[in-house]
Amino acid sequence: MSESSLDIIQDRYIEPLVPENDEISVLSPVERRGFWLAHKMNQGRWKRLMTFFQRHIGSLWIFLATYNLMRVHGLENFEAANGKRPILLVANHRSFFDMYTVSSVLFRRTERPLKLYFPVRAKFFYDRWAGWMVNFVMGWFSMYPPFFREAGEVEKRDFDKYSLRRLIQLSSAGKANVIGFHPEGKRNLTGGPYDMLPAQPGVGKVVYAARPQVIPVFIAGLGNDLPKQIWGNWRGGEKVRIWFGEAIDLTSFYEKPDRLRTHKEIADHLMDRIASLADLDRAEYASETMGDENLTSKS
Image (cartoon, one colour):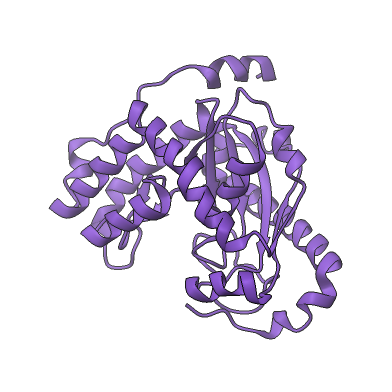
């Protein structure tokens, strides 16, 4: 399929998918209400309002907490992306605040229209009222769609089938859509800033089905202690580094069969590109991060 054909397909409006009755029925009443609330906030005028708050309020407080420490590299790679097609940002994951910080940079330093979506593990954010509030205050409901993949909740995997379809839809169409995804699947709480967990095949399945623009991102210098992170902005904490790589050409993978092995190969390739950005960071900030690789991050 040519790039012009993709532009036409990915720029058109598609009615948001909704879960089937047998998929939504596996959730508890609180989880169902949490999902429908977030689903509504990610459509139409509500999404535009949430995006306005993200741009003018959310990005501001992140800026105020990091501006003395922030170092951004390769942002021109994001700005060079096709403005008519969705972008999938694939990044390493060590802190709760990884994608919040990336989103602040995008809102404050680029001109591209943005509608942000961050697929999230549903535990806490969708199964209790406090989680709904955190999703609202921290992400303006952009932590969506949710995935219920916790151990012992096998029956809720039926709902995850819907979330996967919805994620593929968001990655397939919508010229302002920017989806933040962590191929590792969860935060890496061991090792140093350049250690990464193995990639999970889920991101490969999404990429293979949706064919979005894929941009790798490497993030370092963020912790999981919010007060300490804010304090460090004025007291000389570790530099926060964000590296944006060039869009990844995945054409060769699209010529392979649509199966798990191909999805895993795509995921591994994405992690390799993230690791390449980590090598650039290591070379640039070696003197400042010496010894960090022997530290263990805790939350």
